[in-house]
Image (cartoon, rainbow over all chains, first blue to last red; front, side):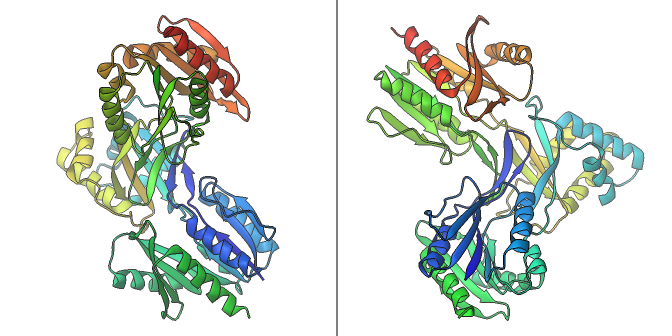
Length: 248
Length: 248
C-alpha cells in the first residue's frame, strides 16, 4: 500500500528577500506519516524546508517545495508516475501569490492614469491593467516609500488536480477556518466536497489548535461526521485507520 | 564583556494564517555567537523561531521574537536593563508591515468612492484613507476573490533605537542589497551611517551568498573598508575580532 502526504505551508515570493508564507508546523503531517509507516505503508511525503520533518525511514521518501506552482508541478509528476491508494493533502497552500508591487508614488501614478483614461468609475478589467502592464522585476523592493501596494492573484487550486489525474485514489482534504462555530465549520467542509472532489475532509479551526489540543472533525463526502478528535495524535490515527480500512 | 546579537528574519502578520517573512537562515548570527563565546564573551541572542539557533552555552541567553514591533519592544527592554559593549544587529527586519487588505471588489469600491469624492487626480493623503477607514479585522482573508490588494506601511527603523538608548555601545549594522556592483554596495553602506548611527556596517549582496560563499565588506563610520571576506565563518571572525579589539 502506498500513500502521498502533503504537509507544511507554501511560501510565495514577493521579491528575492521577502515571501508570503502560510503557517503550518507540519506536525500533524509527521504524525500521519508515522502512523502509516507503523502499518508498513509506503509514504511519499511532500513538505517545505521550514516544516517539521518525520524521522527517516526506508519506506518514506521526501520531496521539498516552496510555492504553490512548485507544488502543482511536483504533484502532477508524482501522480502521473505512481498510483497512490490515498492522497492526504494537509499542506496549507497559498490562495494568492504576489503579481505586482508598487511604491505609494508609483501606485498613485498608475491609478491616476486609469482615472484619466476612464473619466468614470473603474471596473475589474481596469484593475487587470495594473498587473499586466509591467510584471514585478525588482530584485529587492526599495524601502524608500511610505506605503507599499501589493497586488496578489489567485493561485491554481492544487487539490483539484489530484482526482483529475488519479480519479480512483482516496483523497483526504483539509479545511481550516478561524474562530467559527462547529456548525459553520462542518457546513463549510461539507460545501467543499463538490469543488475538491475529496472523499473525506478534515475540518479544523485555528482558534481550537493550541499546545496539545487540536480539535478536528472528519467528514465523508456524503456529509456524515465520521469522527471527532481532540489531539493531533488522535487525528493522525483516525485518518490513517480510515484510509487503511478502505484498502483491506 | 557582553554583546547583543540579533539574527534571523522578522515576520509580519497579514491575518492569522499568513505572514510576510524576511528570509534569513540565521547561520551567520550563530557563527558570530560562537566566536564571541569562544572568547568568554557573554551573549544575549535575539532571533526568530524558524532561524538556526546557536548551540546552548552557559554564557548565551536566547530571546525569540516574530515581528518588527516585538523586536523593537524587546530591544528597548534589553537596552534599558543591560549595558552592552556591542550590539550586532544582523536580523533581516521587515521594512513594511501589512496595514490593510482588500478583495478586488472591495478595493474597486473604495477607489471609486475616492474618485467620486475628488473629481480629479488622487494624492497621497487620499490613499491614507484606505488604511485609516477600517483596520484589518479579518481572521482569515477569504479566497473568494480574483485579486487581493495588500497595503503595507513602513515599520519603525529598529536600528535607530539602539544608539538612542545606549549611545556608548559599539553598533554593527548590516546592509543587504541584491545583485549590484561592489561600488554601489559599498556606497549604499557608507550612506547608511548617518541614519543608523552605526560604528561599522557589514555590506553584503544576496547574489553573492550561496553554498559556502558569503562575500562581505566591513566598513567603518569614516567610510574606510576594514575587511573583505568570502565566507560566513570569516565574516563572523572579523566582526568578533573587531568588537573585541575595541574593548581591550
